[in-house]
Length: 142
Image (cartoon, rainbow, N blue to C red; front, side):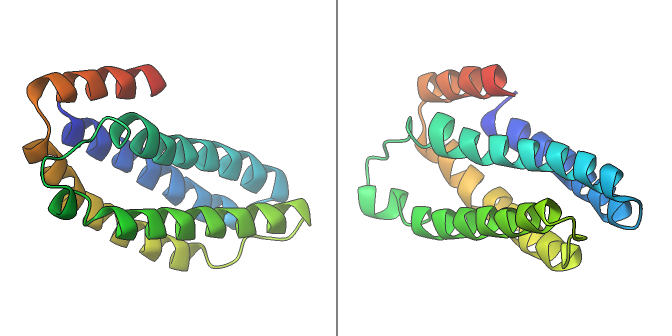
């Protein structure tokens, strides 16, 4: 498997967990907490993989063009992590999570950005050796 295939597969898993969370919000608190905890862990792990396993190994020849997508990617990751933090605080206060649908919209926009822009650019810019090193790191963390 290559980097885009592994990461898209992980996107599908995260999307399924988000769907589970949407359903759990309608159920009792303990189910919502359990579902959120699983979702949060998988999403944070995914972001960690991207930022640590992939981008610490990414050294494009053309730095200006190669790093053009990183500010947007980082901005989106920060927004996602901030929204997760808000949801976590709501749960700690024993409140229901609000705005799951808005969060889902944000996440789907982020997914599209990565799948249409970030991953293809990485696939073109990395050498086969770099790709294999990153794939090994991804598999180790997943």
